[in-house]
Length: 515
Image 1 (tube, rainbow, N blue to C red):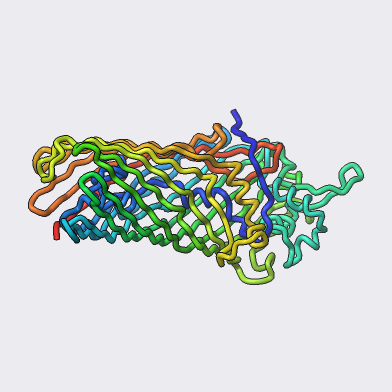
Image 2 (cartoon, rainbow, N blue to C red):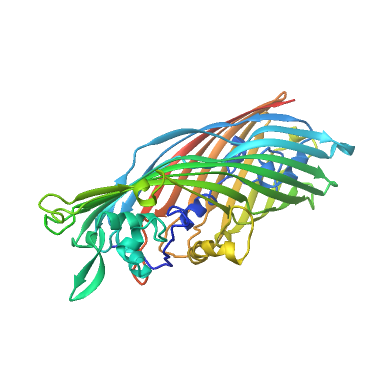
């Protein structure tokens, strides 16, 4: 069965990078927090529980449970392997292993009257962009050059005008024109725009993406015990954002015809985005009974000023178009732009607001936590990815400055939806030893039900607490699904995409000391 969907597609002008897209916005927003080993063992639930440094990044009211000061360090290792299905062809990627950092830092507890105030300085890896994606298959429906030809046709420009350095046509389309993959030809006496890659009846396509980087957050937080029943807190997060990504797309004639003016095309792109982010988090914890904790937290949008660089190249072999065996041509960025080997773009991206409600039940809740016997806790989180928003870099927002970004924001509104995410976990305590288990499920952000996406985590771990020293060890099994579009065509044509599955594990260790 061929996988196709209909969706809103838009033609991107060259004043905004070809790589900037709704997918990039989602990538910078759809992820799970990497907390301490204890927090990850209980599924990441922390909006009502408190007493863990991860509360600084989820609900800072939970910092108020600290009556002493802690130093925490959380190294981790992640491993796994991706699988893909594209045009009914299954592919297994190579295994990947990398190190990461869960919530680490300092929590200072027991300040002020009745020791009700706590402060925290913590750092954690919010998102991991270290991944490789690869898929291939036979496509008898569409071609990479099809939307490029559509963009040129809609421009009503001549080829010379489109290739001019001041042209508003996107760089990939100009590259396709330069190499004659996109051209004009007389069809039944009428001059029409053609894509020569559509000449074969079937094409073999392969797409490879190699990515590195991530988002690291430094968080400054305060929590206070207003009374025995109410706790509140607020924190400021500073994100350090970096991603380097190389995309290699290759399309070739899968027929045996060696004289149809198309052998192959290749698009090679190197993309880097760097920047920072700022956000605020606030929350409350209410204890109607000593053993019940109810939590509420709100995360503001993360405001991210970003700088993006892009370099790319395009090559094609059109067989005998320029004479027998003389159809190869290639072009780089400098030839198309008349400048350097890369373009630079600046913009801002705002992530969606997150709203959380939570409940915890503590077995034998007493002032001395050494005598507590365990707990169960659960979070429900709502976020709407339609709230993702691109804007101008300099912060000067008006109708004129917003106009270039409206196509992206309209596409985000058409493609994404609101989601509910669920986290559940518990702990049993046996004097100095603890046993923990948890589960987390992040639902699909895509409107279209054909796009099967989710993030699912099953976890378990053990902990040790004694004489001011604590050690926690956790294993998390990842069962993730997503989709990848090698390119997008214009409606009412349908798009084809790859189904991606990523299974793997995380091993996390937290070592802490009372100070």
